[in-house]
Length: 253
Image (tube, rainbow, N blue to C red):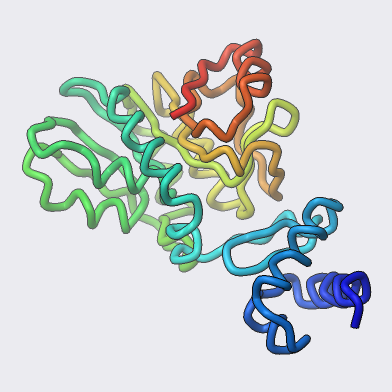
């Protein structure tokens, strides 16, 4: 089978199943994993699929959401740099909200032990990381817990965020752009993010550059709602300048 024929079949499988993975494709077509990666790269360049950790999804699946384990291993170095840069935004002795997200979780893990803060979160993994921190007064928001993100959602969570004010929110997004704003695949999770944005005086978006230009099913705000974007240097200077012209400060870690 020639490469164009194989790529056409890979695209069909992706559209039929919603996702393809490298190892399964390599076994099916009796080629190396590196050959499949080149095929996926070609399809990605053509705008037909979007590469994700271990495989690809067809373009147009706005509701696709990788699981927590997959997201934790994606762009790990970039997320670590973003989390380190975000430490400078911690309010001295203040109150912050930590949204559910793997980059935000890295920030939580990096908070120095001598730091004194009040932290509010609806993320079970983040709460677990901070539960034994000696300087943090931790408030865990309740609600229905989504299996894919381990985040509390729905009425209890929305009501709780409606009753507080915080100095800073560190928020995550699956996609961000000047055109489409801040998006995530799940409507319930988007509603909680929107409530958290409304509860904070200052909003800091932590998002690696691969999420720039991505669009997902549920919109929870615009870049105009974000005071500061901390991303990695994969975001071009031109794109950073465009975002800053809209009023959002950009830090490229």
